[in-house]
Image 1: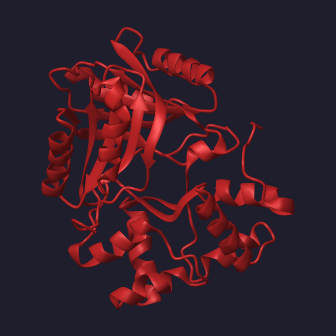
Image 2: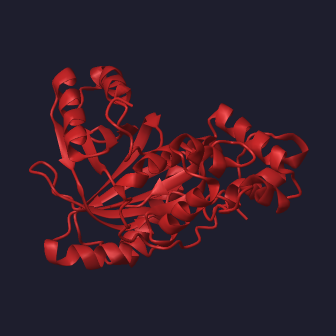
Length: 332
């Protein structure tokens, strides 16, 4: 079993490890889910809620809620900027101030600032990029996703690297339920009956909320429902984005092979750009850079990509990491 780094929760630390690791996905769709979680480790529902609130306060837990699938709604975009080193902090602050930006990282490359924007529609998305370009005076590479092969940002705290299901196209959220999806993006209320509390402001009873979320999970609209961890706080601080320049006719088969490799958390195809010829991306996360490099070399060989142009971009600073907001309205 791999090394685990978790804050000290006293005598019940091992039970907390189990709870956080087990319930990053497959969250119980029942009226009192925290009671069901506690039953597996000998805790009461109130103790589970208290532990999760503590994790939120320390920044170890991002939220307890849904990660929506590609195509469920809204729009997303990966961007990169080439920022003079002396301006990096200032430009990164402007980028992070945009509500639609959910990830903002410095990477060790000429294109040194990488950020992800999500929004309710492409109009909001493009307006966000344009504001960043206008304020910074810099142009952004715009790299829209064309196909997801694997998206799984649940992190095994014991480093087992078990395989997870690949990405699939999500069933879109119906317009009438978009307000519910927006609330679920924010996270479940940490109360005894969270689904009841989630639906009450929208005039939805508990059963209606459970049915809607159950359908979303069944049809890929919700890719993952459970505890969303902030991996840096658990010692998983070495992460690298590897990009490959793969010809159009080969990229889908290469992406499927790459996505199947142990250790790959994200794998997707993106559009290239005049100054950026790369079309196939994968992410590998780990505790040490050297181990991440070894994993990248291994998966490159195993996926048959050793002859393709490749670059490895390690993250060097995390400026912002929050949940995606596909359903929030402009200005929310």
